[in-house]
Image 1 (cartoon, rainbow, N blue to C red):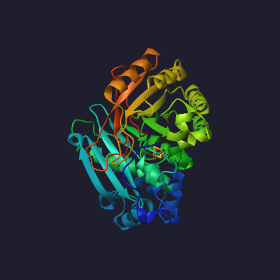
Image 2: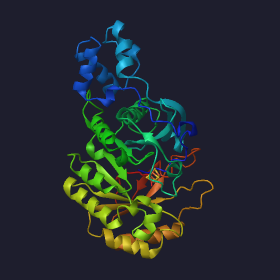
Image 3: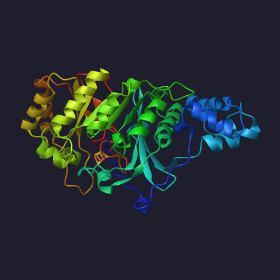
Image 4: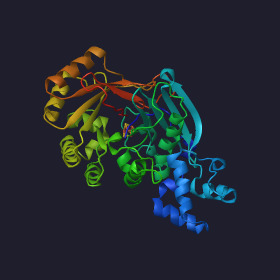
Length: 385
Ligand code: SF4
């Protein structure tokens, strides 16, 4: 959930019936791809070949698939690899280490992804929905509403495309191989549950079935859809859960994260702790620092009491204000005091160093942010709100 992407959903796309994108090999597991290839009258092993080009070599141009018969390349690629994402704009900042991509989908919807290069890793932040229905008031995406869920392949293709960008070597000073994926672009991932889980399975399956990433390097964020958190815990996946909390008390969280009116702080945290127990994975608690709204010392103390002794880590995120918004980032001294109180309570805490702020349209609220934690060097994360 949450990025606070500032790029609005295409107004022309709003109000239309969501139209399904064309089927793509990333929508299917390998047997499904083989069945599709068989329908074309081709031997089943062609599915593996095309999959290996897409996931293994990051190649999607049929002319480069020279192990396929020339007569079948266009047909196989046209069927298995239809174009899902059309680049509209690519923006770079941080000396090229942060690159934001804006895509147009087949129905005109716009979504964004962000590639972030670091000396030891490459992370992409991907969107799971066009728009978002969660209506968080400090988030431009939330104000625009939900256009539609992305398909599994539309989600996966963002990562595969940007893995190809990283492999091309344009992100100087970073390894060429994509290592981390965070579901923190547009949308609430757990509101598009089945496609997001299928996308995770593609991302972690070894090539040619998938991209071969480590489950531990995948983070799914949520505003706190309790039944979906519990369902995710039962999936036999060990991805990191990032809970966008933003307030420790129901009175304020009801306003900042409206879904809290359905599932209260205590219920959401119970689900998060059960997730941590089941998976053994530390939960990230995301907390956007909003001036004079949620940054009071007493809220730091309350948050500390809620989290003390739990398998949790707090990511404090300096709010990236939307132009014209009444929401602003907390002053640094206030932020430092918040951190001090949490750490005094024994809670591991990071202040995220936002990336990409000078990119016009920005990477969403927190769309390109990364932890910088003196307590936990090397810990990776980023979030949306
Ligand atoms: S901050 Fe809220 S409204 Fe914005 S993308 Fe995340 S869940 Fe949706």
